[in-house]
Image 1 (spheres, rainbow, N blue to C red):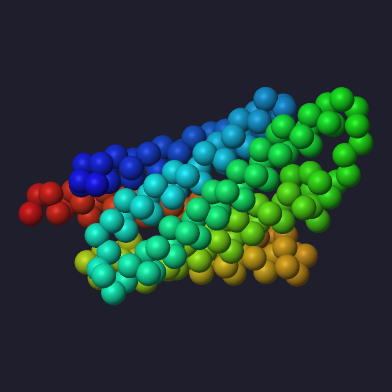
Image 2 (image 1 turned 45 degrees about the vertical axis):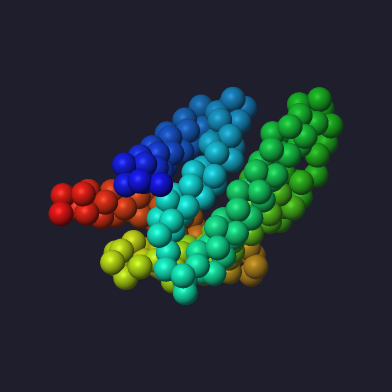
Length: 201
């Protein structure tokens, strides 16, 4: 993967976060099933985009750090699979049943807590994304120290936020949200800066 491709991947990551913010804002403004479906669809798509971002920065990992890079990709793959399952089931099964007038228990709905689907989503974005970011931070070259630092801090935030659902205090979960929702665009911007600077040298 050349530098130009890596920069393009970083721009894709930023664009995905911007799209996510727009879709969430639209949902809260309109509060319709269509905007909710859009929100969930963008959530499903955002995980593989972050996976692609991690892949792009872990291409040139040193041999003695490759295990950490592989672990990071594996954990982010878990996030992609789990959040995909949770939201796809909610779109195609849970909400479809509710639309037919079938009373779906709250514990099978996204947006409710405690809920099976929300627990899967929290596990994906808190635990597995946190581990992916932390492992990527260890794997990266010291040359990318700013990216390493942001990955480490974001990963810690994701893990710490897991205390929310575990101890049934949902507000703590937003620490995880800050970890991946703010951390991702910052990482992408740092990637762009690093590769642009490298290109000019």
